Amino acid sequence: SCENAELPGVEVSQIELRHYSFTQRVPAKLSFAPITVLFYCTGKMMEKRFFDTWADNTIPFNTGLVEYPLDAGVYSTVTINQFDLQGNISYAVKLIDAYPISVSPLILNWADDSVNKLQVVFAYKKWLTVDTQKMEISDGQSSQTIEQTLINNMNNTSKPNAGAPDVPTTR
Image (cartoon, rainbow, N blue to C red; front, side, top):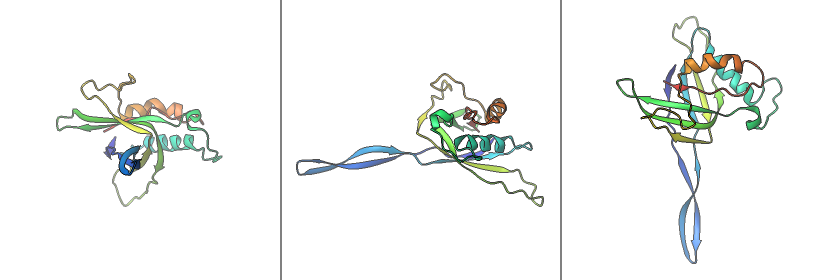
């Protein structure tokens, strides 16, 4: 499960438009800052393995050769949910064509008996708001928890070049 996540923002870049001697700044492009998510790790470290495998599929660790992302199956959709006090989803977004750009190291320490937490930073092409009334993603796939996704995808992503998994709903 997830300890915390960020909801994405947007930055609108502008250009100067000239019409005769008048100038006006107009919107030109959108940019989206990377999103940081902090996951709790289970004792079997499924989360660490999941994201390490996905990062390895992005640029294989053993070769360092960059493949065209669409061919390598690097991109996936990440759903981030905000829950109300009753546990209902009150707001949700999808990160489109997302992939991990950073998977943090884990500090192992016998003196500290706290749960391991894994920080993952995602880059993405764009984000969309999910209709929380239907709670179904527009491509027809139901959202799922990280636990369900990790279990469903561990076999597929443990093979080299298996491609990016369908990435989880965070809680």
